[in-house]
Amino acid sequence: MLRKFATLAAVVAALSLSGCGYNTLQSQDEQIKGAWSEVVNQYQRRADLVPNLVNTVKGYAAQEREVLEAVVTARSNVAGIKATPELINDPAAFQKFQQAQGQLSGALSRLLLIVENYPNLKSDALFRDLQAQLEGTENRITVARNRYIKSVQDYNTTVRQFPTNLTAMLFKMDVKPNFTVENEAAIAKPPSVDFGKQPAAPGKTSELPADGKTAVVADPAGDLLKKGY
Image 1: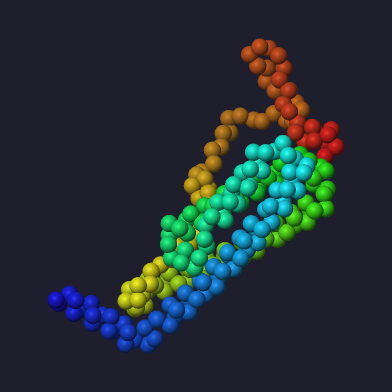
Image 2: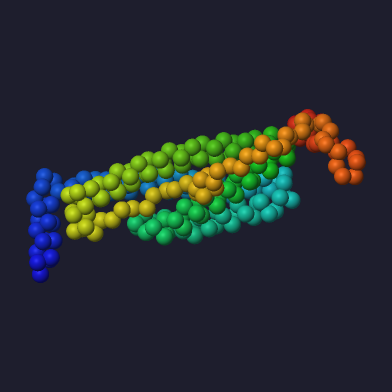
């Protein structure tokens, strides 16, 4: 009984303070919703570009079936997630959304990488236009995500600060999930450096192998020049 009274007294004291933080919490929550809408809008813009991009690439590189199918599958997974305003209050659903978008980003990166093998595709006007639109959209996604991240940081800080944390508890306002680095584990892993071996210069002979024959190191840049790239 005494504990309940103390809790109630603390809540009343918090509410009696100037503003009690409620209006600030509401304002920051609306900022998050607005920032989230822009994130979803830019992700949708990218998803809308995918079908035309895939069809254009298919016209020149139909044999890259595995890469093309990966893009189509990733886009389908993205479309299957309803990015509703409620999603930003569900950490599990938010993580699933982020993972799906990350898979699409990876699939598109691989698709654009194989384009380097098809000069005719690179020179196609429609493809160049789609590529420019995609690059612009990726930039907009980055800006929108950064704004959302900042909005969530401000809100989460307010939710955890005293005395607004008491107001947040009273109205069941909790911290919200935020975007994270998708390959955080890989980035955190320190690179392995071996100073014991010196790479051979391109096109030069390396040390003699066990069979006594001279091994020649490939020169990728020279090969591309020979092919006319």
